[in-house]
Image: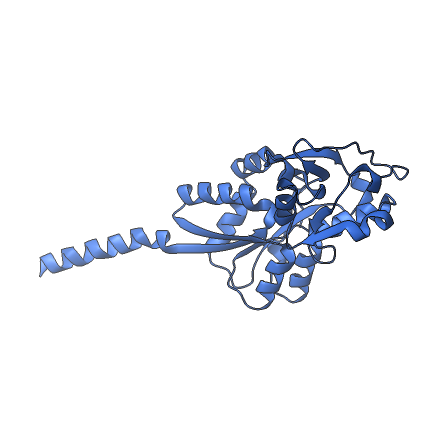
Length: 254
């Protein structure tokens, strides 16, 4: 009888030890965060017994998935618009929301096919390159929305609008330029920096578009470990990874 009690105690101990490893988190993040968040999630998994499943796409697509009930614990958007929409629908925990990161918007060209660009209203941007201009979808993808704002502010919109290819997310726009299918692209600086197949032609003025801010928040029906991961995203270790990829670290206010 004592042996049975002893075996039962061992089993309970093993189960309690293994339980944390069974924890799973689902993180939905903007496509431009693919490399940085994947690295952070991997490091988090090593330090905590929690499996992180990450999914990357346009913020608009991810927000719509959450609206339709897709399981998720953390959402990181590339703009405030889609996070606001989820907050209005009571899909996120408002108290958990904060501004996590910032970024810059750049013009890129295929490697070896760069061109001159001056970010001023008098510059003939449309005449500076031949071919198409790739960026995110102009109406739904944050990178494309920022790009349109900048093109309009610089008075480049009318001359380029018929040559623009709007893609499903910013990484798709990057890929088009990498393959030379687009002669120019407007993407985030962090996307351009991870590619050896493109060159940065110039940086678009920050005052030509809305501030590029990446808000993060927990989804209402989140796993207990979500708070731990959210805290980790704000840790010095995660901040170093974000900085290595070129993201800026703004004043993280909710």
